[in-house]
Figure (tube, one colour):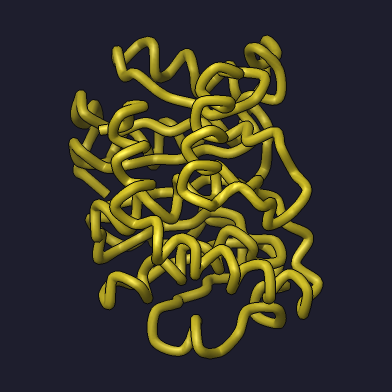
Length: 235
């Protein structure tokens, strides 16, 4: 699912809507205390994934002040379908997100996601929560291993360097991917600087290069569960 050509195609197909979403995100950032955690390219790929795949159910683990949440909700709004289920220990996003985005498409559950009941059959899962090896062992075994084939997944804060530190969340995730022979992609300026620069060039040609916020690391890893489930019933 995730390839350089596919992502570039998504940028071109949805350029007009993405341009509008970027302007709306810029306005939201100016109006609200958002503390963005997703940088522009990784946020845009997340938005474009939802636009292209049109999932009815999206799961987000970790929202903080709702920056990633607002991007996902805009994608669902632009699709005209779908519900975002967000799980977090804190509920800052309830106070920062505009009602026009949350009114009909958002379900928020406060608390430890490990004790929560997750919705069935998600089409896209975004994980940006507790960045520890222990939590990574939980979500790989109890969430990712139970997803159906073809689910798109994004995990934040994996590539802050050329490769994750040994014993980190990132190393647990990459070991899990290698064991299942699942390819992944990152647009991190450290993890894959060539792809980062290539997408920056695509954005310039599409008049999408003005930054929405100042972050430029884009450490997220993207992959699809193309190899299928390993354990138990699908989530």
